[in-house]
Image 1 (tube, rainbow, N blue to C red):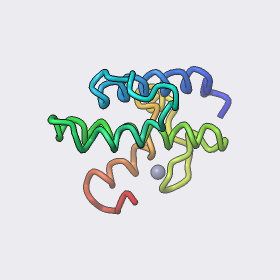
Image 2: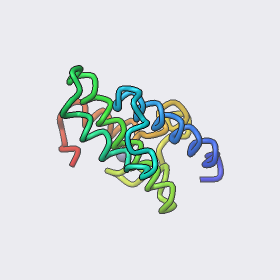
Image 3: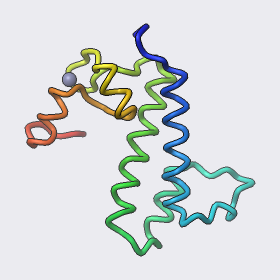
Amino acid sequence: MSKLNLDKIKDKLLAERETLVSKLSGNDLSVDDAETPDPVDLAVRNYSKNVMLAVSENESKQLILINEALTRLADDEYGICQNCEKDVNPKRLDAVPWARYCLNCQELVEQGLFDED
Ligand SMILES: [Zn+2]
């Protein structure tokens, strides 16, 4: 794991999450700022009122992936494929820091060969 710059990845994930959250909340972050609502919660709440359903569905999913990646970072499990438990290619993580699977397993997911959950 020494090849991965985890601080940089974390920064990327947090920045991406902020972008998504502000998109999903329709740029209206002023609502209960004081409570700093959980982004997923915010996304879900917003999901029901958002007009652009398809867009926000994708973004909500990505938000979940980002939160998962942040959890894996915290748990010291970042960069491990969630299916085969091999190391995910660092270049892939650089491009898609919230990637759940290595390239092989991602292909299987896309072909519907195993259930994501
Ligand atoms: Zn894999």
